Image 1 (cartoon, rainbow, N blue to C red):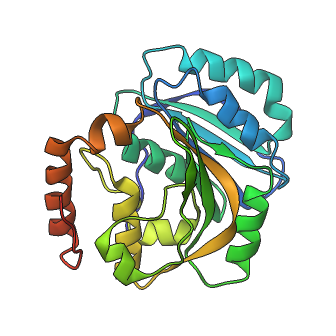
Image 2: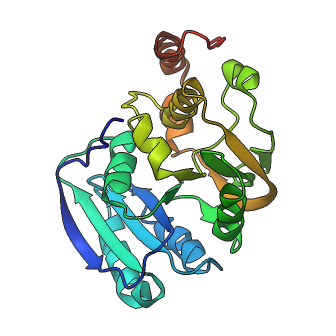
Length: 254
């Protein structure tokens, strides 16, 4: 088992735990001042109680941290434990997620980026499903919104399908023990951190379970990492080459 390391950081806001929680929501934040409050509000309105909340800011250059601090001061009573963490230097999405995981104290981790949203029953249903299975993670169906509409993430776990492409978003409830067993998220230059994680879990015979309900919303916008970096053709070829080197059983084409 590989220990997941937290990058060098400082704590900007903290509330200590009152109970032994089961779920930590881990939010990765970088220059999303216009989205972060809506994301946090969707976590605030979850039917599951208690919830731990860890937000990792990866050296935002806008007002993301200030906006988040103001929101936390107003809303912190709802949460069991809160940590607002700021990296000492920009380290990327994988590092932000790993820092949050390393600092969490619960058996289950829910990953969400600071531009996406949860419907109120999301954590409750994902936790119910994972506790009634031996799965390493559960993932809901997602509703796309913003610059594109539609449904994604509605396919059941299948390793052969995973070999062709990623069909599971990062928004998932994951056992911390499984994350630790595969060393958390790998550092990826151009994206696909979540795809790499699912592959690493599959290689250790872990599996995921689809929660067959629309429980979260995936924001489509030009500034997202997927559109701004990952899907650029020159980067996509490099990612495919990198992923195939990491996981030779994949059958990817650029």
